[in-house]
Image (cartoon, rainbow, N blue to C red; front, top):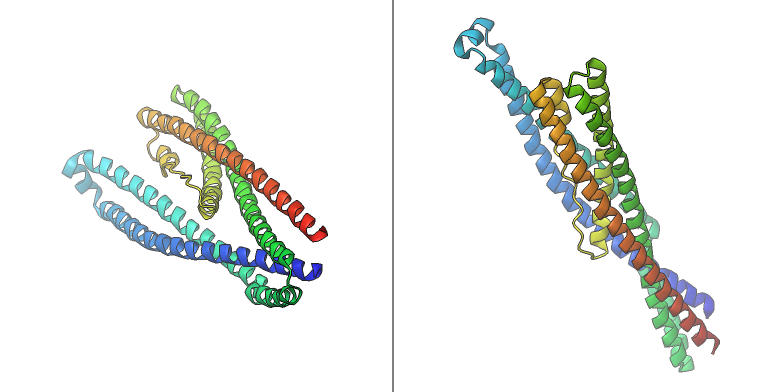
Length: 310
């Protein structure tokens, strides 16, 4: 009887896990489709921007000089900047599609590995039901009820642990991004007062590092937000750091643009810090919820053991 009960609990837990994975997969499929449409739109936008630059570059030097005396050059720089921004946005969305597709593939493999727990549960349930009817035992029905509650909590604990892991990974990447942005701000101040080539190079290196950490954080935050959604909590974890601001400094290496980028660095620092605070606060709440569920599951187990031993 005890062995049959353990099989019943295990099958029920797998049923919960399979249901959660299938719901996650459907959400990711819808998300991937929406991002593919966005990617296509951004790809067309990038082509249009590149064509605008190409048209300007085809104009003869004399025509360029005579027509607008400087304004055309300003337009050229503006168009080039828009190409960079469009390319960055398109690249970001394209990468997001790949990440989600990898998630979907992983979920499908996990679903397949779970097999058919519904059939196993039904088999065990019917066998145990027949035994209980034969014995006329109310105690057995109570054991099944408690086992189902425990299986649900165990499956939820796995979900919470996955969310906590994703949250901590995002927080770590945001820690690194904040450190790089802080360093870039310090070097940027020196750059604006004439720090020279090496100062500019170091600043851009720090910005590149920050960009990399931010993109890593975006991936983890996307997973974190999805895990929270699966837990039916109402968190809004979004990363909206403007794309293109690091590249802009390469195109317009002037004091005005350096001030512009410096302001962008400061704004991004505040944004990243806000995200760090919200992410770690959400992780703390999840850890508290995990502790509550563990206590509930332990109490159900004690009650179940008492019923079995009675």
